[in-house]
Length: 278
Image (cartoon, rainbow, N blue to C red):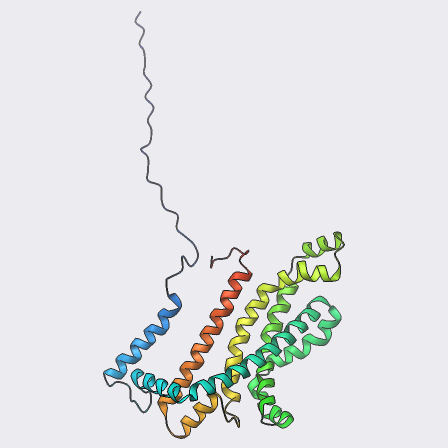
């Protein structure tokens, strides 16, 4: 009797290269990504002007605008108008931030406060601020007070809306925990309310900064004797396209710089959050 021995062979699958996981979301930040769009517009503008495709009476060439910009700085006119405009925008923004934040906290933490405050703010939200300028002129005249009040009214709404929404979105478990720990009203505001409302407040601040500059452009063309809007209006009267473009570019730079500053503060203040931007 013959005993046959069998050998068992174990087949092993060849190692396959590990497939790289596809990253979801926007991906890593692009160096100088914010400057890419404006740079492309500038290139197209220069190319159109250099090839004669753009009428200089409609849109002055970039080099003409740069020369005018330097002349305005040398004369000191641009600095004077810029200082006046910045003061107006900052004053209206600061007042609007305080009023909008206080209204949002009162309305967000009190049903009675919400019943009184939320309705009028929603009405104001439906009415463009610039549509109220004729009425504000009748009430406050055409001086500095009317201009700052107009900017303030434009700022209040986004601050209130986003801060109020953030307050109402705070997890109820945090409120219950605060009650369990028997926190005082001030401690509750400091430890729960303010951190919870900060993301919404920062978002509202970005909108508010933009609206402050937009409102400033309009109010400075109403019986103003200084400011960027006055400079633009005067240049329009004399057909100085290059001066108008200088004013518009300064407005754009101010808006971009303001938004970038708010975003920087937002990243620092909300560094504890993990979002797609990180």
